[in-house]
Image (cartoon, rainbow, N blue to C red; front, top):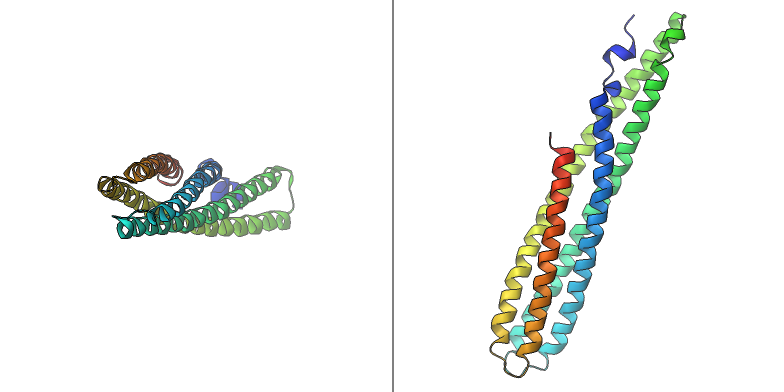
Length: 216
């Protein structure tokens, strides 16, 4: 008689630890995502203030308005992408917890095999093991598909952060041409630069966590 303990992937310590690691990583990713969302909200506020200030510029009103609108667009795109990351992390958290729970359930069942003498009991346990293994295989496939989507969203966030750097440069260039309001727009550029740098650090930390959890 072949027992679940001898062939079950759900009972392999490596696979169980993998689920735990993914769960812990997703908790961290959700926290980092909240940090990115806070920064995109701050960027939206800066965009609104820049748009208001642009109306006061007699020299570069059109240029400042374009830059303000672009800043708002980047903030909205970042917010949407971070929302995708949060949703993916939430689903991954649920899936990994399910995987851990099912693995533990199977272990509990197989630990009682030695006390089983009836053939039909052993067959029943083998059926349960097969069902759990099938479920866990499906979970792993879904988890890594979801991970790929989350990583694509994170890469897109990085591209938005690069755009922030460019917008900051343009704000500073235009600010140098406006004697009356240049200082205000330089302050906006400084604020955007700080947000971009901070967001880049958070996104980098998120990358390290994801890499450690999902890349063998």
